Amino acid sequence: MKSTKRVLIVEDDAHIAELLRMHLHDEGYAVTHAADGHAGVLELQKGSWDALILDLMLPGIDGLEICRRARALTRYTPIIIISARSSEVHRILGLELGADDYLAKPFSMLELVARVRALLRRTDALAHNARLDSGLLELGNLAVDPLTREARVDGQAIELTPREFDLLYFFARHPGQVFSRLDLLNQVWGYQHDGYEHTVNTHINRLRIKVEVDPATPRQILTVWGRGYKWCAVDVDQVSA
Image 1 (cartoon, rainbow, N blue to C red):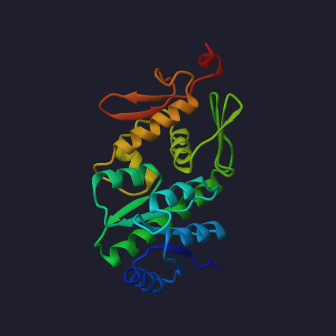
Image 2 (cartoon, rainbow, N blue to C red):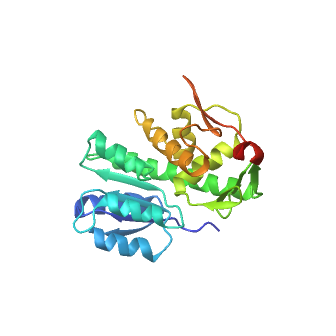
């Protein structure tokens, strides 16, 4: 029997929150509402949430800080930011902090529910694939464990954000294949964010700092000019050479 998906809404507008609660409840989700940032953080820390719908402009702790804290937790929770702040800067910042999607107010309740469904399907699919591919992936000096979500370079554990791990694991599963930034957004972020491909650049640069001997001259996460990026497995002897 499938368990009921749990959705946390952190939104200070009571009218919007109630509309969201009703629509999500009609879809069969168990919904909890927090009316300010402090309450949102407390709820976030209490239990395992399947999705987080997060306003940016909140009393107390703002939505971007809650997003940061959510991404510091071990369990990955899909996050949809909803905000009257529709500027490019806030959209990009939200995505770079680890949000999966961003809807500017006013938005269609039906569209938001559809995006929640899509994110939850993707999360379930990733978990299913991880169980199927539960063996340790080893490519040169890199080892990636999809079950424990741990990665090691030259035998040393590296600290990755959930999104960085997803990106590295995707590369490890497709060595030698070239992916454009939009390909990576669709495959790793799970939703098409046209115009935000430079978010991929930021995560690529962070990964290079963590896995490359010399991030300025990468030998594993390679740029294929005019096309995108690819992972090139490098032997331990080559890396240390």
